[in-house]
Image 1 (tube, helix red, strand yellow):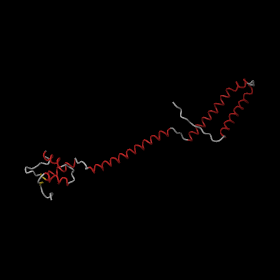
Image 2: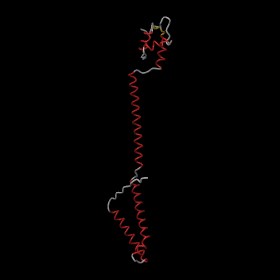
Image 3: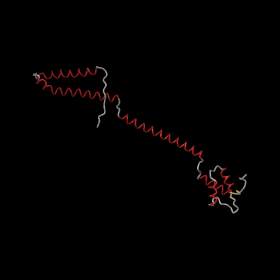
Image 4: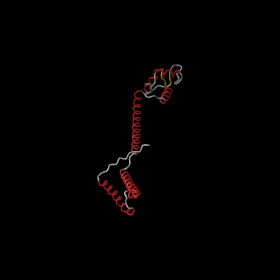
Length: 180
């Protein structure tokens, strides 16, 4: 009924029409805007439908959602925040896991390192005994011309000891981190 006329007979009818156009605005605000000249009141207190339409367009640009729309907007924002928090937690968990994984070494690497240490230990023991063998023979009153036989006996004893260890079954080696 109002759509077919060029003017609203008063502010109340214009405001009712605005509400019917899904504009959320209080009657007091609309009246205050009319008093300030937008939309302009005619001398007979009528309002131009064109000006009220322009007012509607300008107000929709600064439109604030209704409470029910706020809840859906808030729900969407909360959902996005929850997703972002979950992604952040996954990233942090991944970083912590990588930090923990840095402290581990592969089984193959550990085996190679253990073999290297055992080999170095065997060579070091052999070297020390060979260096001390003349002192050992002299201290027991032996003959230095039989030094090669003494070395062979010592070397065989070391080899036998290493074989005893290797044939004794599974050997568990705990590698501990060196504290600074």
